Structure formats: structure tokens, C-alpha cells
Amino acid sequence: MKKLIIGIMLLLVVFQVAYSEAVFAEVEYNKELFEKLAVNKNKVPHIDIPEYKRVKYENGLIVYLVEDHQLPIVEIKGYINGGRRQEVKELAGISSFMVEMMNTGTKHFNEKELANYKDINGIDFGFGVENDYLSFGGSALSTDTKELISLMAEIFKNPKFNANHFTRVKQEVYRSLAQAKTQEGSLLDMYFYKNIYNNHPYSFDDNIDLNIAALSNITPESLQSFYDKNISPSNTIFAVVGDIDTKKMEKMLQEYFNDWGMVEEEERQDSTKDKQVKEEKESKYQDIEVEIKNPLVKMERENYGKVILVNKPDATQAKIKMGYNFFDNSFENRIALTMANRVYGGGDFESRLMDNLRTEKGFVYGIYANDTYNQLGGVYYISTEVKPENTYQAIEAIKEEMTLIKSGEKKIKEGELFKIINLYNAFYPKSYKSKLNVINRVIYNVELQDRDADYINKVIEEYNHLSASKAQEVFAKYTYPKRFLTVIVGKKEDILAQFEEQGINVEVVEIK
Image 1: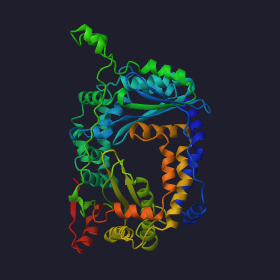
Image 2: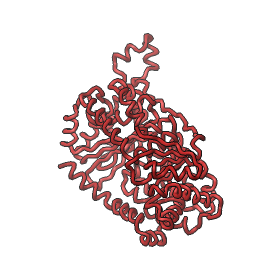
Image 3: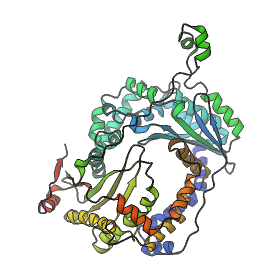
Image 4: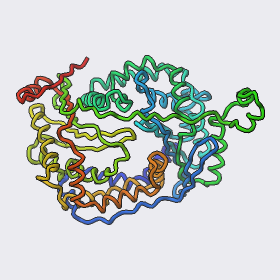
């Protein structure tokens, strides 16, 4: 019942966002609506950063506290620095396995007890796994704030990896991976990212075969070891937002998290023979600094112009993903490139790729160009699907359209850029309607990216001051049509001959 109440309240909060997203989704399919939204000039938005208190506890834990008394709910969002980049090949997928175990049972709650505790107190709590961090979030009615905080502390401090549900979780992971091996989208991502990122940890999540092979190495002992090396108050940051009193919440968090990372008293007494040195230098906390791994992504020149065809005999379409290694999060021209890229392949009706491949040629229903950035190296890629007989022509049209902009033959126009900026001004703020979403982005920018707290508004300012000439300059400089690695998933008999006729070598992969 409590979860139902919370759900209704959250629906009231996010209704405007959901409605706006629904309208935005309509842009994808309704050209008249796109024109109407794009032409009417929207006001340059400003995102209000809520008042917050940043607290750093003695063990290194960082918490942002925000009061919001509109509804009687408390919400939590946060990050654990590290993510998949901390994994090794032999234990690929261990991050996801670990957080699933943590959120299913603990040392003091078995699987059934933890589920009942969440249900009785109306608590939602879950984890996410990304390349550079783990994310987590939870919510409850404000009357159950203490229960939410105590549960979160229990999950973080007292995991039990040798619990009875270990075998079941492993079986579920295996079934999920086996199912993914039959899906075209999963196969597309596997062969794309394992080539783009090679043996870098960023490739592990999409590499189904690697994850299946690594499952046998994931044991309660390896999970505990991975947890000990990667989960610590020193690399954990979260926000508590809602119907709270910041002073009381600060005290409550101190009560529940103060002993996280603390050395047991007996262990401290035996840690040194020299009592005087011990008293002067010894901390009551163990060495809780997490070593964040930084293996930079290497640019794979062998991928330039490479075509891989994954043969799936029962496929009715050809799924295509083509791209190359790109910049990391520090790329100075990221905003300009993103806006220019939306002119090229943003997915709306007036993007160059949609106009060419859908409106003119009728090859695709949708096509999207994406520039994504991680801490250690990003990727630029284009994804679409076509009828098998149009595969080669579609790929060539994609490269040709990029070349036309890059060469200056079809430069980015002010009118095109205005429509993109105008749409951003309408929809960008919709992601920041709640204080929780704003402070979550502040935490991400400040604590994980070393940016200013007001970076959200700096992004808005930057794209609104962008000129077509600057967008053209950046797109021309940082796009590489000759570097595309192209991965296709489809029926070999319907696709391969198109490339052979053009004298193009294709690496054919037979699924085992």
C-alpha cells in the first residue's frame, strides 16, 4: 500500500516530464509538429540549482542534503566511483552480479526477509552499472525515512555473497545471457564494442561470450574480494532529497554510516607495537581509498574501413552499427559537436540522414548518429536497420552525407542549427523538473567530472551561443567517414554479395 501511495505521488511530480517526453516522442513521427515546435522561438531556459548542504563524513562519505516539503516522500540518488572499468577479463560482468547479490540479501536479512522489509515499509531501492560508476537510488514515505536509511546502510555495509540465493542468481544471469545470444540487437552490440574497445573493460558488458565464460569464475569469494576493493565510503556520493530536516538527516546518516570502513578495536590494538606511534598516527578507519583504474582506450586502426557481417539466418532485416573510437569526457568541443551531429543525424525528420535515407530513399524508418563520452575514451556511432537488399547502399549514403558536410559542399546552415537549439531550449529543462534530478546532475558534474555546480546552465549558455560556422568547423574537424567500423547482423545470403560485387572484403561471423 505504501509503495502505491509513493507511486501516485511520484506520478504527480513527473507527470509534466512524462507528458513533455511524450510530445517529444511525437516529434519523431509527426513532421508538422516538428516544424511547429522548431519554428516558434522558445525562451532560453535557466535551471535553478536548489539550496543544498554538502557533508563529508570522517570516513570519506559525501552526502548532499536538500529539503523539499512539497510531498511527504524522501528520495535518494547516488554514485559509487569506478564501475565496469574496475573489472578484469576473467571476471567480466562481476559488477552487475555483485549489486544484484547486495540488493537481494545481506548478513542480517535473507532474501525473503529483505523483500518483506522493503514491501512493509514501502521502500524501493536498486542499483545500476555503468562504465565509470555504479549508480543507486531509493525512495520511501517520509514517515519511513529511518527505515530507508537503515536499509541502505545494511545493503552497503553488510553484503552476504555466500547466501542461498547465489546459485539462483548465477542461473538467472546465465539464462539472460543465453537469451541475449539469440537477439539481433545484442549480437550487434557485442561485435561492435568488442572490436571498438578490444580488451578494454568498456567492452565487457556487451561481450556475451566473455560473460558466459567468466561466470564459472564468479564465486562468493571473488565477489567479496571485488566488493572489498571497490565499495567504500571514500568513493560513494549520494543525495537525500525530500521531506527532511537537514540537521536531523545529517545526524541520522552519521549514526548509520559512521562505522562503515572502521577498523575493529582488537585489530587496531594489534596494528603496531609502538603504542605512542599508534596513538599519534593510527586512524580508526582502515585504508579505504579505492584505486580507480585508468586504462585508456586505444584507438584501433585495424578497424578503419572494416566490415563485419554476423550471419543470422532467421533475420528479416539488416541491423547496422557503424562507428569509431572517439574522445573522452574532457573533449572541449563536446557541446558544439553534439549540436552539429544532431543536424547530421539527430533522428528527427529534418536531420540530414533522415532526409536522405528515409524521406528521399525510403531505406529506413529511423536512423541516429550518437557521440558518447566516457572517462577513458568515447565512441561515435550510427545505428539503423534496413531491408537486406539495401544494406550496401544505405551504408554508402551514410558516409556520403557525412562527407558532404565535412568537405563544405553542404555546410550546416543557421536555420538548421536554430531548429535544433530551439528544440533543446524547449525540452532540455524537462529533465530537471524535480530537485532530485537537478541535484543528481550537480553531484555527477562536481564529484565525478570535476565541473562546476552550475555546469547545467553553462551547457545551455554554450549551445545557445553556438553559430553555424562554428558547428560546421567542429563537425568537419572531428568526423572521420573513412574510419568507420561497420557491423551488420542479418542473413548472409541476402547481404554478402552486395559487398563482394564492390570488391569489399567482409569478415563473416557464424554464430555458435
